[in-house]
View 1 (cartoon, rainbow, N blue to C red):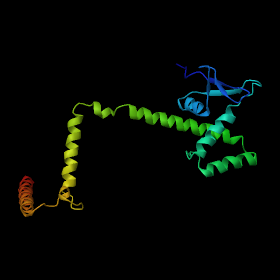
View 2 (tube, rainbow, N blue to C red; view 1 turned 180 degrees about the vertical axis):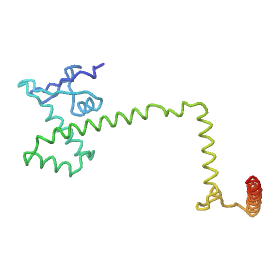
View 3 (spheres, rainbow, N blue to C red; view 1 turned 90 degrees about the vertical axis):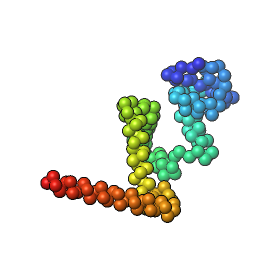
Amino acid sequence: MTDTGKRLLIKRYASRRLYNTETSDYVTLDDIAGFIRDGREVQIVDLKSGDDLTRQYLLQIIAEHESRGESVLPVDVLNDLVRSYMTGNVSVVPEFLKQSFAMLRDGQAKVIENINTMNPLAKMPGFDAMQAQQEVFLKAMTGTWKGGTGPEAGEPRNKSETKEKDEDLDAIKRQLSELQDKLSKLK
């Protein structure tokens, strides 16, 4: 079991093989990409010279993924990156990218947190009954909508159903008329 909080040291031997110092075995670029995907920070150093090769290998991982069709970086962004190297305005770009990715990580963490936590209303007593009533209400409202098609949208299936709907409508009109009479008497 590895410690995910500690930076993983990878040593590159003269043979260009990469050696994981935690597990004492050789790793590939895909393995390193997997470590990073799992949240590990890695550092890749040349065994002989001690040079830090991390940036070079991370760029190689990105290039391999991009060449496989796993495009993350739009061409416009790549053009802007190349342009920033050519114009000498490189000093602003790293900080901008760092802050942008920090905001992206924070946003993703909040979305995941919201997904993982239950809706607070779901804990409220009677929420299931209220939700069922809403579904019935919506079904009733959309069931009588004349803009749709099919029997679910309020179209009669046969002549007897048409007659029943007309009778129901007449009954509703009578009840409405009676209510209006009662209201006018109250005034």
